[in-house]
Length: 403
Ligand SMILES: NC(=O)c1ccc[n+]([C@@H]2O[C@H](COP(=O)([O-])OP(=O)(O)OC[C@H]3O[C@@H](n4cnc5c(N)ncnc54)[C@H](O)[C@@H]3O)[C@@H](O)[C@H]2O)c1
Ligand SMILES: [Zn+2]
Ligand SMILES: [Zn+2]
Image (tube, rainbow, N blue to C red; front, side, top):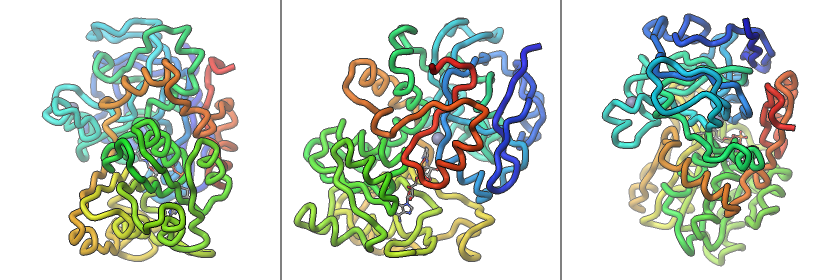
């Protein structure tokens, strides 16, 4: 029987490479699997041999112990792979196809899927709308930081690369299609970025850098990225962004120095609920980014909010934060008629177009986020370095495809 190694969450601050079962066309019981999903037949699925599987800031929320993820949950929702087995009901995807997997698991049959809202599919997670591989409260679909992974509703979910050889030449770029590139793009689109826009992106992690890259692709005049991590700000400058250093204080004055006015047309939150306050040695302050974006974004503008917010956070700074309730200055946003877009990025809405931009040399997403392949065995080190703030997007290479 084929072995299957995988990265599992063990306890706060710890991941480990463990042995798990090779997937079958049925969702079996295991850590984090919703009881109502146990035994679910997946004849519409395929088994992928993983080509690339990235570590994400969303994984870090779990690994930092900031969610209710159970021990031994297999991680990994950013998956690119080659099909090695197809289920009985798969019609169009074939063995040998090289594909990107949207991190959202979607059925393609429900009302939301029909409206392209694949981040809130109604049929894949018995707990609530929306699902993903390897994630707490997402139904229990086994994560893809492994040699092999099961992908349900394969004809619907998978994006097949048109030419395998050509795809392998750009595989690190294409590996960003499973999440952060579409997510950053969605952040920029939902913030209203277009030709000539001025944009502030809070957060210079991979999602923020992907949002900044997307803003350029959409024609923004000026893209300003804010963080308190100098290495990550340097990464943003490396592809033409302006930057503001939030350890020096509020972004408003620094933005005024850049633009001549203390406001931008479009605001993107690429940070989420573990946001730190502004200024020297500031502590965690979960509403900081949302409040500062409301202040900074011009009246009538929009906020794209890919940064993740939770309904339960065992490490929250106070009782309210532990339930996901934040001190928002909503009056500011209301007075300025700002609009907000939150939630999982509906990856399928953007991934094909962004694939074409990559394959035709319109964008260098892997370079902009500093993507780096590492062996699966080095996942614990990758997680630790990423958590320490490395300006690197770590891509696990479980089967040696990424030489
Ligand atoms: N909506 C989605 O579909 C989706 C998809 C992927 C990731 N996410 C979320 O996007 C967020 C970013 O992901 P990532 O992988 O880039 O994570 P990351 O943790 O690597 O990056 C977050 C960055 O924000 C910085 N930061 C902290 N406080 C800040 C502040 N007040 N202002 C500006 N920057 C601040 C940190 O220093 C860090 O560099 C996470 O919350 C992640 O869960 C959402
Ligand atoms: Zn992700
Ligand atoms: Zn659906």
